[in-house]
Image 1 (cartoon, helix red, strand yellow):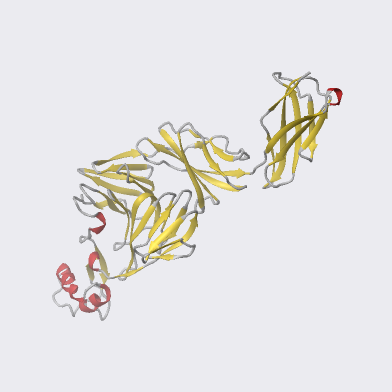
Image 2: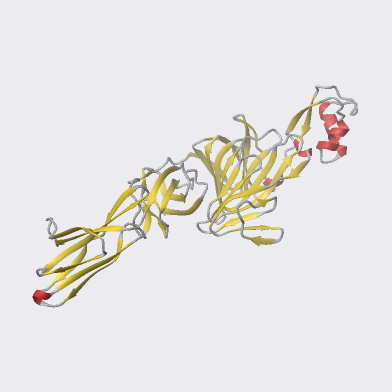
Length: 444
């Protein structure tokens, strides 16, 4: 990392323990030599034996002896508390498990690139990448999880179990895009960090998101639950749930996250060619994001889109089904806000291929109206024809059609509008959709 970086400090029991300003160094390479863990001496323990079991090097027992004022490393009082420096503790590689993968994703490890599979076990050094509308979720050994939304690239830089305490030391580098995390509380020897080229987010039990836009040189940390400490230059910030920090190489700004948006007409079945969502209600929003999933927890997410405020969010080529959508607002500072989750029903109930064909002439002239039901469920149709430009009851109104066509004869010359209502039953509901009016001109 070049220039001045920003360290997002570690939190324990709601207190900022400390965060150092990094200048011209890789944030991920900084050992935390000030942290220690406690060990209670049991019968038969010697400092040398403990060093052989728990420390990286046997000779580091001397460091522990000096730290704790031990004069005889072969004789320890039972019940005595010893402090062990965290950076000297022995660790063992751990694994993350791919619990969900959707769309085009890849994993690079061991010098090869492959498509990740559900249940695959990943270790340190693996780089996970997602394409458009692709998602990968990893379950971590301590019960935490991380999720990569679309267009993201993340490296598992550190994934280890500390043998002395059983805690875990975990670090993920966001190379580009976003990473969402649900972090479980960690013990004194454990860490949970998400690193970008300009910042480190380190927490002890919280739900948060980290984003990095390489082309803009900007990053963001958004806290949904818990709290995160931030230090940038001479500013120290404690970020509470509902707040976020927009960061760059020159500083960081604390702000409230945009509130949760509302969905216009959330109960309306999505019956058109595309799912069309209209979020609203967030004054500071410059854009909105939407993510589709098959579950309310958004674990099985499979599509994502974004649109400027004032424009609808659309999802193309989505099969019929019951889904959940998560909506968030994005502020001008690049912070993504508090989510709102809605259930939506996607059922194609409209009609396509509408045609009006005429045949014959004079009194024998007839008109064949034809359409095609969308979807593969049995449907019933209602046909209406009205005089154009008049707010009057239909001239022709025929309900209960089972075939997608009707033939009419003897229509007077003039301009008409006609439309079709398609009714079907799906997911325990009766659903009806009218087509847009179609114009028909009949000459004399």
